[in-house]
Image 1 (cartoon, rainbow, N blue to C red):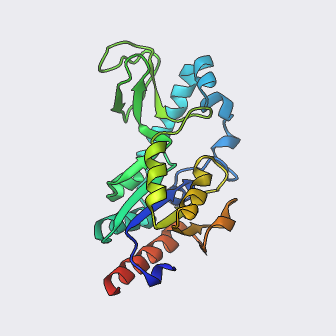
Image 2 (cartoon, helix red, strand yellow):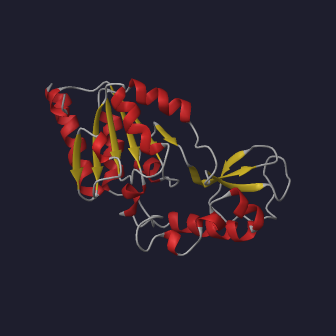
Length: 242
């Protein structure tokens, strides 16, 4: 059944780089994106970090500075409003490492690829928020050892966070929405298949069809800052009128 025909009990929303691009955060795969300036093998793999830790730290230090300069856009605020006002459960699963969802007010969120404003100590496992620069000489605030800190992000070749929780949520969802995703990065690209097989109605909100567009029941294309607020408004109105 389409969204206008029912009130959904459990909504899972997957967000990708497209929802934050309008806030000024560069995407990796688009023309002019980050991968045209840096090799992923150098800055987004454990091997690259072992080879050149200072260069990798410098890369993420700059990304943190850039993130702190931008603000959430209407799409982020719309999802936060949906979480506050919708009568059912709303879970945001994001591939993004920024904190724009949280700054907009979203609370029920899982960062499957980690968080840019957090650092992890590989010596003791301590994870903490960090808005400043980090280097190989920076000591861990918990164990005090230098040289063990790394960005708390998932690099290529590493397992995403929260996968058991995400899979359970997808299997229980009756509405699955993917926003601003390319559909080329797994396991996230396969979430629509899990949700659909479990009976969820699946909607794609994107600038253009993703690589897995065929698995969605419904498609709405355009800038996230325009189509996401309209979709949220529709869900809230339908819930009120149902």
